[in-house]
Figure 1 (cartoon, rainbow, N blue to C red):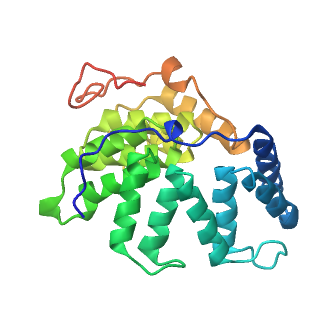
Figure 2 (tube, rainbow, N blue to C red; figure 1 turned 180 degrees about the horizontal axis):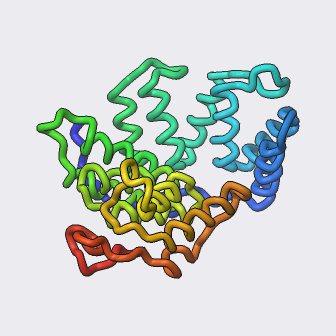
Figure 3 (cartoon, one colour; figure 1 turned 90 degrees about the vertical axis):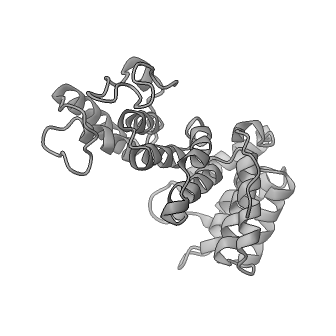
Length: 278
């Protein structure tokens, strides 16, 4: 499929507003899902359905995910591809970026619908144009890594990654970091995105930060920085805190602890004296 020119958009600017009462039901369902041990699936589904009645698209996404896999051995939520498709279709009708992304994935894999690369590509690009960071990194990865080597195009890929990396998706930011690390070989910019992911609670982000400054582990996480025990301990301590409380976030991490300049590439391999914008 020939992709038209990409214009960066953010998911938050296209997501429909959420009803306040429905959001309370949604949050109650999420809390029940996080309970350890046996979960009250009947009540969880009931709460999601109440929220969905008020067009709560996050509840649609979560309940569709439950219907996609079911919960074997537990009453209250059984695998139901038809209900999953109905919820994804409803998200698309509401023009939710994540709905277009979900539909692209099921078309790509033939889950509940006939497998169609054309349909998957169409919905994936619409999702990206509406600001889905997951769709943006999927298309970026296509241009950067999935085409035959002689046709890979990092210049086409980079705008998708830049747009996704500026949003609040841990997964998309990690993919953006990997693009700069592998395709662009821009080590300081890659670590910048790993730090951004870490600030949002990403264990992968922290693993890369810890490894980058560790004097002992210089193989998997070798970004070319000089070992720094103080930074290694600092990020290790934050990671331990995150392991204790997975909901922990570090919103001031990048402002309060900017990364040092890379020994050879500065703050950005293409612009050594310019720090990437936070």
